[in-house]
Image (spheres, each protein chain N blue to C red):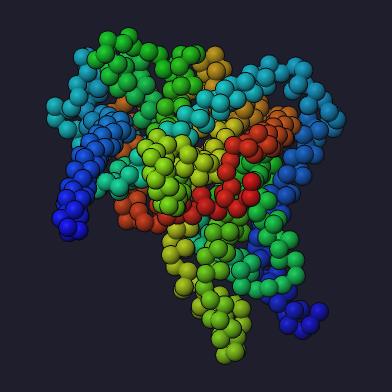
Length: 300
Length: 296
């Protein structure tokens, strides 16, 4: 008797489950389709400016102004790039920008890893006081420092030189110091102690042990320094007077003033400025994405 | 102090010396200096003229631009911060769904935020162009008459906000990382109680993410209060000084008119405003944010 009474229920149960799972997976499909549609719709909106950029960069001046609007160039005008790049000394601007980027990246990697080592691996009195001092400067709005820094550089005769745009990188920056200090603290302290037993001093420990181990964090800092120097507009605007010293950002802005109606050339120039970053992004995607998280985690 | 402690102290200072020197030279000294010159009339050529509180007095009683700049900067902040934050938070949630290929969308939504502002600004100026711009062409499909966007008193702020939303990938990525850290058992608990997606979002996601949302919003706020590039590159403070943002005003005072003392006073006022705003935001949001470590 027992088996027969149990049979129906044990047969029914799986049935119910199958039905509910079917129901659920149907719902799930609807939901996923909805998510995809939403993602695609937003992507289209996000991509549209890029489409407009490239479409216009490849058009003739006349086509850009044709009414009703043309959505694609009839013949892609690759010469726009050449024309845009030669109508202003963009080659020179590019060289200047790269020069600034290289020195800033070098300075940032050297100084921040050095300073962070002191905060992370050596225990000494007043360490926490100074670290608090460093962190405090994170809160200061850049706008307040703008004029006094400018005046300072002008007084020492560094206006219209690259010094104001390079030298600060060699003295560390609160943000990167914090980032590296966090990273260093994940490296076992026994490494340092073993090296000390072997007779190494702190300088050697920093250079020979910690530095090679902190490559991932250094790459992140390097990439973000690259981005901030490449994209900086206000620094060059304030400090660089001679056109021959300008950076790409500055050159592009002035180009925009001179060619305000030649949208096809302007768009071509913008493409040139975007391109290296997009390439960099695809090479360093991991570092950039995780770096953006790190920076967020730190500040919060 | 033992011998080792002394040695460590020397080594410690050697390593952190660049930071101490840098902060003193590039931050502390300039701040003190700017505080002093805010009480002078100085054009960087002739010598200082001590004028006491005159700069501050003029700013508060006799400077129309000052009050206008405060107004337009706050309007920009009040519109921009919620729009950008809500948009990027919703995007992050969307990207957190477990569907295939989501990393492509993540890349796509994030890229605009790392591009140089100058080039982005030029692109959007063309998009907003009243005659040949993409946006008016697009609106034409829906028979919406062309708008003046950046040259319209009413639309200039919304135009800048739309652009900022497009570039809001930074906050999105931070939120996304936070979302991935929300423990799954909380969502399961909602499921057990028969709650749906909306319940999960309101009763788990939003409270758990509130510190991150708050952090993003504060950073955004501090940044937007110092907006400069938009005004300099795209609008020149116009139309009708509707985008004559505070930092742009400082720039004009310092570098176009050469009033360094006056500009320094303006900068210090901005500093005080930022401190007050930040403190107020912290004060008022205390009850809105859920901190896990806290026992309530």
